[in-house]
Amino acid sequence: MVRLTIPHCKFFMINLSIVQRANPKDLNAPRKYYVSTKSSGEITLDTMSELISEKCTLTETDVLAVLSALTREMSAHLMDGKIIRFGSFGSFQLSINSEGVDTEAEATRTQVRRTRVLFRPGPRIQSGLKQLKFSVASKQ
Image (cartoon, rainbow, N blue to C red; front, side, top):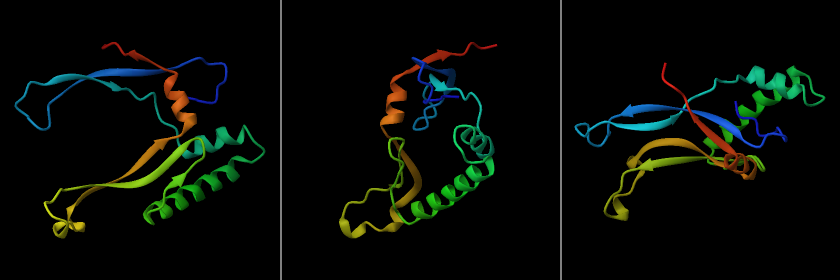
């Protein structure tokens, strides 16, 4: 787990794995090896509320209620096309991938192929990214 709030740490270690993948644009091309991040686990909303409650005067139940309301509000505002800014943490917004067409008249909503949510890190995360160190996990 990466914790950006620990002031005495000089860097954060991210575990990597080596994976072999095919080229999706040319399945007949030789497979290549890529370095990929390896998860160090996950954290649930319940655990996050417990950790936050230890750092403030709110109870775990209060924090969980706020985080639940936050996720509902974020979802609603993202679906309304708004950018959600979280101060120095970063921002979230909807993005689409679409097919290109030759003329403006041909451009319609039918060109939309995929929607996703973009996260743009703010200064707090960008600062943390500069402190990352990487370790390749050995195969066992």
